Image (cartoon, rainbow, N blue to C red):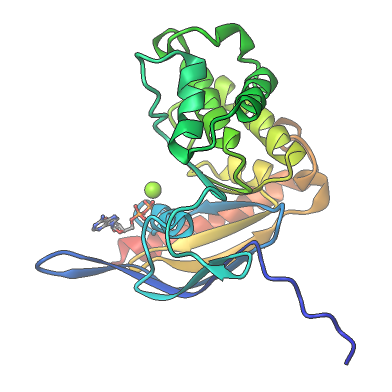
Length: 267
Ligand code: ADP
Ligand code: MG
């Protein structure tokens, strides 16, 4: 056979089970999760609250180590946090007593990679995110959408090649969220990042993702996986919503969610 062996996935979870332990009990958050994310893919994860989405991101970020199974990035098992993986949460964790640019540089300080060059790169990202004018402002002066953009710049400034986004738009008003979806989508594409977005907004998952994983809960498991067709996948999220086939996909994801939500109620 002259087949070349397939390259390792950017992210691979193989038979991953994770238990949270307390002094009195063990709780199985996710069970036997298998998933594979290729380099440059944009993956969305949806599922009822408590199905283990945040747990899976924590495992990929190396903040938790799986009770069983294997989490690897580029074929190497994840053993702790690394610069390669950037993690952005719903809450932006900006420090109000620091300026916007100092909040952005903080990520570089923490990683020990602050230099003239990395500072310049961070400032370039601020510019790309249309934040140059507020460089010297305090986060207190910024809207929710602007604060999330700053948080994203802080994450991207460290040049991770994987981005984990845990419901980053959920606290924003609808219009801000739609605009931010387009901006983040195009920025991540341009920088060729691999991204995983957790969202409870089904239309957002279709508009932004190349593929969607739907999870059921108690314990969290992969219930189904949906590939988004190219016409929708390659459009900006705002335009994707008007593409042929979008509504059909929405109904499909909606139905799948009904199944996993009913199953969750039965527990
Ligand atoms: P999701 O992000 O999908 O809402 P989580 O990953 O936060 O789900 O949680 C999955 C399950 O694990 C939930 O039942 C939750 O209560 C439980 N859980 C999450 N974190 C902990 C923890 N640190 N200790 C104990 N149980 C936890
Ligand atoms: Mg969560």
